[in-house]
Image (cartoon, rainbow over all chains, first blue to last red; front, side, top):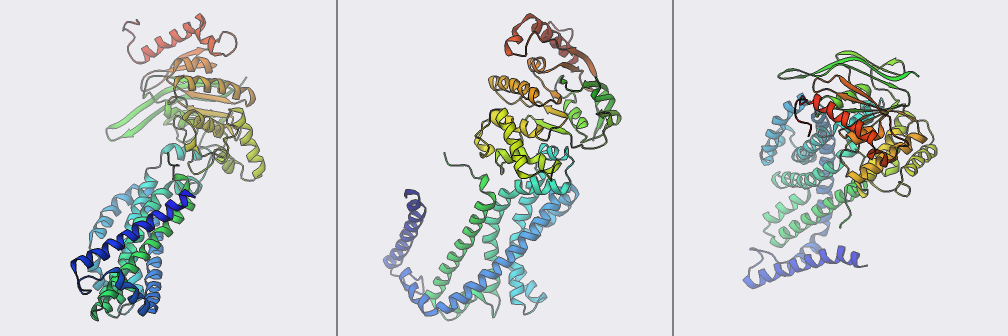
Length: 255
Length: 263
């Protein structure tokens, strides 16, 4: 009873306090809504444009998840190659670090020129490119730091490399993998929105933000920001939920 | 009686950037079936290399390792291994950790039989009721007991142990020595134990082999004549003191400090 109250009540109270402080700040400074909208302006924006919000959220959501899925597959594959082969590790690390250091905003025009008009494809690609790095690194490190005794126990029984991978290496890497996925999910989300906001005639919440800006509808801009935050929270906790299922064993009971 | 383990003239060197590093030099060891062979020697003398050779995880540069009258060419299903680090799989329960070797060696064995076998061993080492716990919920001594069960669950004919009790406190270690004797009564196996603890080698071993410093060769073989039953009190008899003294002197020679004052 007390724990349920804690788990749900405390975060909700924190959000209410945050909104109240925000409202107070705007009211105390007497800011008009084109400087900064206040929370009380938002319900109007949501009720007027709810259809656009639904469509935009869905577009942002599916493209983020699609990019993330590709990032998980490609990142895991790269991580496996780097985890098992020293040569691959030495060869790929500088390339990956260099690629990761490039500000992804600079890749938007490159993608736009390469795949003209393929807005969905470009958005998914960006979500993927911005988020695969932490996954590749964590899987690679997880595999390459596997203690030799773990391998010896199975190898001495004549187990194949594949068996050792599925029975030991893979599950042992899961906590690191999910740690990286939590970072990757927010990154992928940023990637999607980046393309949505920068591309002309884009789709999704990012495009809604852009059109609100063009029409000087400031409460709508803030409403989009809040919607983005909510969507980000939903995605993050979806990953936490998956982590509980697949790597819950790594969590120690609180003492 | 035939020798279950025969190591004949094994020489091995590791390749390092500074040139070859010889670790084993013309090593001979013979362990009859059912015997417990303890191997002691100075640090870094190649004892762990020896375990990997017997397990078939690597091949010696020169010489031969025979198990059961067969030349060891690669990993075999008939060995069990236990290390200083219990290396239990954190995501499995204790019961399923013990079952792991059966999944590889006997994939067709029914689930019920596997669980019954694991349960039988866990009961034997005093872990009844902990089957569904995770390794992180157990103490170090209990984890090592579970690791021992896993090492013998598939009834290996050779058990290879590399300092399995090295990280435990003295009393827990003595408990586990006694557990080893109980296990051997119920589950006969031939055992090679690598250790740094001379008392452990005498209490558990039928023979104690002293390796020389690197590169290691067989320096001395002690035939353990334990006074009476294998109980801890026996370690405080004059017979055991003499054996321990002999071993200590041999270790000193192995370390190249024979001339130093024994006192």
